[in-house]
Length: 129
Image 1: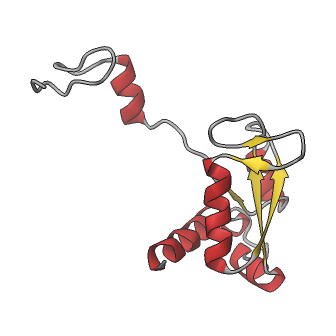
Image 2: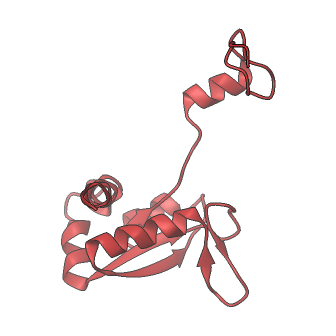
């Protein structure tokens, strides 16, 4: 529980609009005053997030947002966004957080140039199995 609270704090403070605009109300204060966390989500981005015909969200980015809101003891609201506008949406205050994963340079390097001992499928680490 403590780890989740720390994660929640890091995510909210690390990605918040307060880090992007000096004169804005800090996102933490806004979230706690309104008792609501607003998370931007990209529809049709399985397995991270998806919206069904009934308007219900699913995916593990959605579950992360739910866990953070639960840890903070606040309500959660989802706002649709796109990858082109998510930063602008955070800066404008449309949402306070976005849970997204991106490939790292290490991952990209691994995919482009495989180190010795690693097969194309990426299953072998150079050791016999």
